[in-house]
Length: 153
Image 1 (cartoon, rainbow, N blue to C red):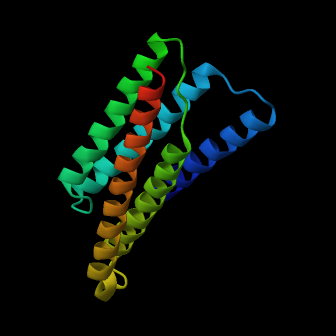
Image 2: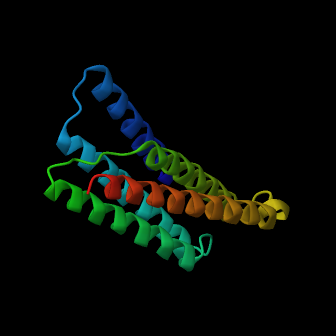
């Protein structure tokens, strides 16, 4: 069931964005709400992976700090009358978050089903590496948002 929720939420988000752009119905509300909804769902998944011991808590904290900092930057920009939507670096970060979440969910599913038990440790290591890469990309993305904020001061 979790697979279904994960796939439907990610696909619906992607389709929503494509339809909005195609119909030219991009709004300031959508620019703010869509990244917020994405982040809320991803943080929830990541928290579950922390509880399961797949995602190290320290990396999760870095993700949380990045995400709340971006929300703060968006609010600062909004006070200036500028709506800061998702930047390309944020979209790339999201793709890596989705990939990391899917890889962790796949590994967790195999472990819970007790199949391919001999490769679970290798998969866990691979998932950890994917999470580390995702966190690095999220930090690079944060720097991009900071530069954008400073350029709009």
